[in-house]
Image (tube, rainbow over all chains, first blue to last red; front, side):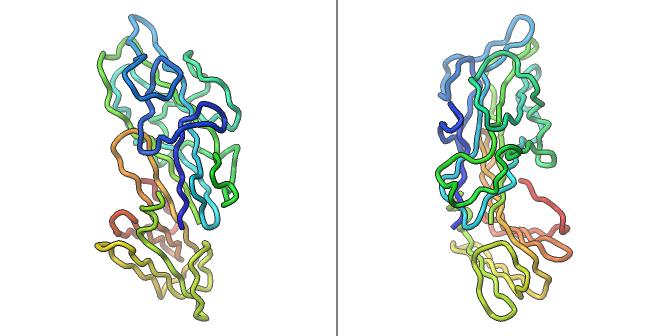
Length: 168
Length: 101
């Protein structure tokens, strides 16, 4: 049988909730709820930042042999509109609390596309084997949305983030 | 992802007639078959080529509307064969091509 891999939104290094095919909502609060509370606001000047989000793959059912080559990427086109960006980075396997100040060391999420993905297993390198069943695999990926004063008010359509993995 | 991946089962036959259904090394295999488990999907057989290895590649998403996908890949001398588990379509690419959907 093939492995079942999920994408979890994390609240600690090895604690999270399944968001596979679901929604991760950037907001002005440190929670994983997908609701209309705590929206980001367009500032009068400067830039407003969401609380960071952390994602990590979870092995829900094991592969026959192994899972490897974890890669994260977007469609390469920022559809959020003027003044809105998302930065991303791999933070390895060291947990730190989410924050709403500007992320340092991140890169534009939409610069990570299918041809140039974000490495997802640079620290926790795998390969991930059946003994890793029901545990987190690979690295934490940290994301943050920024809203500049040039952005327009209103709701945004979702963008897709993909996790690709190989298995044998 | 399990349900989509398991739309196909695969089996390879070695040159001495053994059937293998796990692993990634296809060295010494004479053919590999992908047999659909659901109606409406095409069966695919590869033989008469230099089979080297195989793997599966899963694509799962958060947010957006793009569907999940799972592909089987067979690496042969001179090309790769990719099979979509969602619709049974196949793609031939250069041997070093990496398919990301």
